[in-house]
Amino acid sequence: MPTTMLKEGVIRRVSGAERQVFRDHLLRLPPLSRRSRFGGGVSDLFIEQHVERLFSGDATVYGWFVDGVIHAGAELHPVGGPLKGTAEVAFSVEDGYQDTGVGTALLGRVMRAARNRGINRLIMTCLPENARMQRVAKKHGARLEWHEGDVLGMINPPVPTPLSMWREAVDEGEGFLSVLFPQPPKVAAE
Figure (cartoon, rainbow, N blue to C red):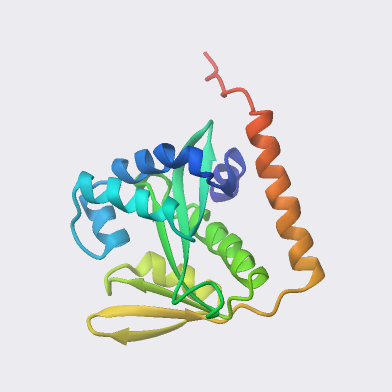
C-alpha cells in the first residue's frame, strides 16, 4: 500500500503563490496532529500567521500533492542565517496518509535540499510520544536525544556532489512539469 499511495502523488517545492494551498493543508490537521507538528495546540490564526512568516522568510517548503492538493509537507528553516550550516526541519502529514512512506520520502527530499545548500546539520524537534516521526528520523540516520521534554533528532547530511545536485534538479524539473501538465483526477470504477 505505501508505495502505491506515494506514487499517486508528487513531492515538489511549494511556491509562494501556493501558500494558501499549504495553509489549507495545515488547517486540515486535527488537534492531535497540530500538536505533533507545532509542539502544542495552535489556533487557525496561528497557522495563518505561521504560513505568512514561512513564505516571507528564507525557508524552503515541500509538499506532497495529490490531484493538486497538499496532504503532507516539510519545512526547511535555516537557523542563524543561510551561511551558518544548520537548519530546522518540520513535517506535517494528514491523518489519512500517515504510515504510508510519505514522511520518509519528504525527509529524503529535504535532506538532499539541505545537502546541496551546504547545510551540514539538521535538527528535528518532536514530542516524546511522536513515535512515527522518531522512526522516520532514525531511517535517515538521526541521533535522537532528550532535551527539555522534547526529542531532538540530529542529522548530518553528507557534502553535496554533482550527482546530488543533478538529482535535485531532476526532481525540481519533474515537479515543475507536474504543475504544467497535471494528471487528470482518477475516476472511481463503477
